[in-house]
Amino acid sequence: MKKRLLSVAAAAFFGVMLNAQQIKFEEYDLPNGMHVILHQDNSAPVVTTAVMYHVGAKDEVKGRTGFAHFFEHLLFEGTPNIKRGDWFKIVSSNGGQNNANTSMDRTYYYETFPSNNEQLGLWMEAERLRHAEINQIGVDTQREVVKEEKRLRMDNSPYGNLFNTIQQNLFTNHPYHGSVIGSIEDLNGAKLDEFKAFYKKYYVPNNATLVVAGDIKPQQTKKWISEYYGSIPKGTVTPKNFPKDEPITKEKEVTATDANIQLPAYIFAYRTPSNKERDAYVLDMLSSYLSSGKSSVLYKKLVDQDKKALQVAAFNQGMEDYSIFAFFAIPMGATTKQVLQNDIDAEIKKVQTTLISDEDFQKLQNQYENQFVNTNSSIQGIASSLATSHVLMGDTNLINKEIDIYKSITKQDLQNAAKKYLNSNQRVIINYVPEKK
Image 1 (cartoon, rainbow, N blue to C red):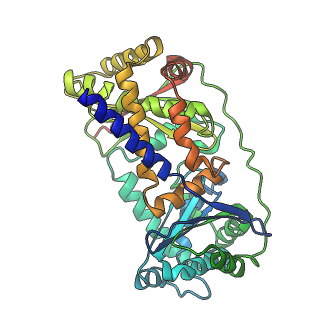
Image 2: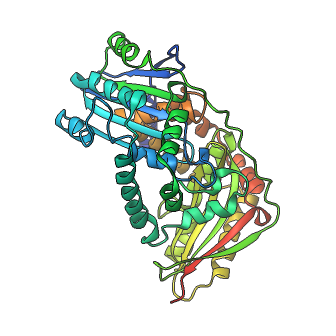
Image 3: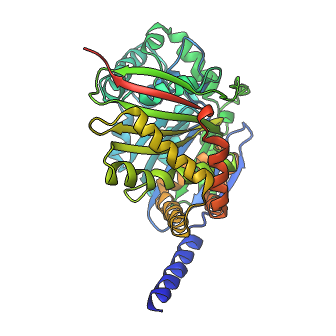
């Protein structure tokens, strides 16, 4: 009885936490098409100003890859009102922090300042959008920065090109077959006018979503937004009509080499639906059941009990147009690829034919409720979630509703998704092996 009372108390506490996590926001469009999302939280004296541009690596053209990520670096070079090299100095000297990141689908910039510098953050992001400096000095400087990043993160890092190898083999027609960082040869070959054209095409207000979250006074914030962003001219947004890939109906096996590894990795990858679809949430939960934490089924079997694998994982990479579900395993000792494949296939077969236990299902539900609370526990996290929900998911209020989607998923849904998407004729097997000396 005592245990039951404790669990009820815990559930009640979690219910309060989830209700407290309801994120209130206001959204509207400026006349130039820029979407604005405001979230007021006066509990701490900080404000995050963030802008998400709906341009990522998939928007690049063949022969000129890497532009979206390159601009993540280039647009810190300055503006007519921010001298080259001063961006980070201005932020840090005013008690702030900032960063940017790029994916296949979007590019995201943000500053977090003490709330008495909210106006500064809004002005800086407007400067970036209105008239960023695109000149040869900046291009040459940032090209070297990107080269070094590629060397460190990919070319000289163990398994650094593994995810790109998955993309190259899962996608043929859709531009997800490329990589976010792109080709250095393409960046080297690009002329200054091409960088200017990319900026003019994609860095327009009607391709951007501005989020201001934190200790704000909405009416004052709106005045600053109107002043700094309202007069920026509207651009022409190109429709995103990307070629689609035919369904995979026959198992394909490829081999890739990596000079930086001593142990092979084996990947079993599946092309799955867009992260806008409910099945993407189901597959995300299924990947957690299979390999999230040391108590997950794959880790317990292959790493802990049988000691056949040094590492094993199932991951679901959600993207705007398609997603990727993949199993990853590094063998232990003399374990062969076939042994790992057989064991992974056996676990897939189990979830296809047998409902997971009530205990495992409840653990999954708890895990996602906890994840929901943690994701939106900071102003920066809330700003990112609001922007992502609007730009990539088409519904800003998903910041509040996503937990309900996960809570609606049943054990039968998990089984159905495994049966629908994780069949051997729908996958690409990648043997990612050491390069022979």
